[in-house]
Image 1 (cartoon, rainbow, N blue to C red):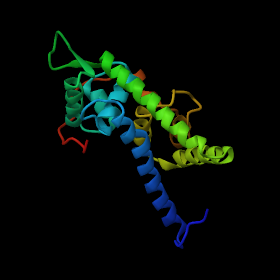
Image 2 (image 1 turned 180 degrees about the vertical axis):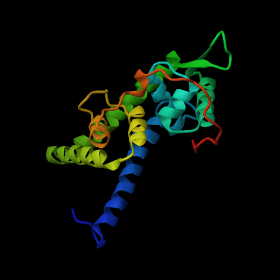
Image 3 (image 1 turned 180 degrees about the horizontal axis):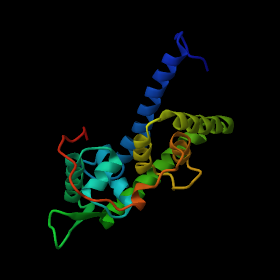
Length: 205
């Protein structure tokens, strides 16, 4: 395939990247959410739900750091998930302002359902591609990710939202080693304080 009438290959790659991001969002998130059967479930709420699933238990501050949003935004995400019965909030007996967040049984079922639907949809797409194209796509995605981030904090946030099982060979860990000389430590492995970090508005959800 060639880049049609565009004389600037970089510009065309930018257009393809935008189309790719939209296609991934539509086929592996938006369409999947339609099949989950949870009214009002959005990509942002799903990201928060998956983050808590990886962490196991955490506070609003942990959720804010892992998602790269404000404390206020994470708090509203947690409240909306709780209203939908997907999250359980356990208050500290000594300080009611502090609470541990964990998924409810229904919340864990939704995460598992999303994972299965995503895998099915991705498999259907990949099955239409020749083997050499699938391998080329894998190599290109890993190469792009490896060179996409320079900032250590951004790499840590990326790790916090990653669905790849954590390992030293992970592309995100290799990226961190190349940029900082040390690997990332999976956020869910490190309990953190739940102290508020300022206000802010909720991102479009």
